[in-house]
Length: 267
Image (cartoon, rainbow, N blue to C red; front, side, top):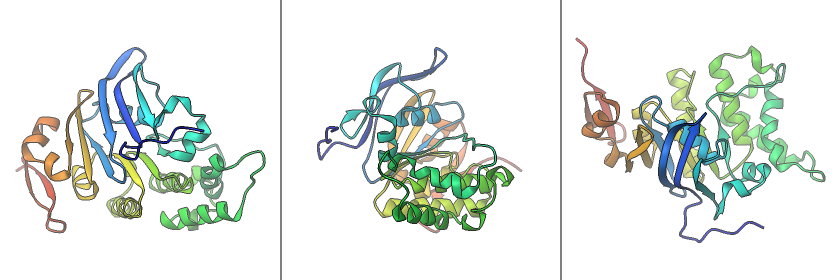
């Protein structure tokens, strides 16, 4: 049985990890803890290491050095199926098997809960139904995934991750390909899941989505963390210009009162 973490220890941490692709180091000697129950958003410019860090946290990418700890134990020590029972991952690029239907793809989210003895159950059926309803994809259930638009596909992949029913969700650019209405719809869904008790870690490009929905923000540049804290602490005009090189103003969001980034420039 895996060790239980100390009650005060976060469930998911990275301790002095270095992550690389083909000997090219992207993240070096980085330490971060994901607050339990938080909606943590990782922001930063392109190629700064955001998605690389998420891959390391999810065990998709093994660290060159350092360690990722999940529930008090090195994540590399768990069998893959056990990791999938503890955290759900939506990768940046996901490829569905040719000809698979939406219903069958979402049902694959229940795979970590299956075994030699345990077969498909009413609980599995309910989990899939709830995931389809939450993402507005129920009417797509009989259709082949490869016939869907990019936005529809993205919502189906989110449904598959939700069907895992894990308390910890890692999402790499979950609003990719979505129009603004579906972006907000998904962000609202993630917000509700977070308020219901799930810990969510998401890589986002939209600073204002991050500022509105996150409870904790990690800002990265050049493979390192340059700031982390609440949206009010991280999303300041000076910090946004430091991280993104973007002249801007930060004003109060008229809906939430939190920070709202307004780029400067143009006519």
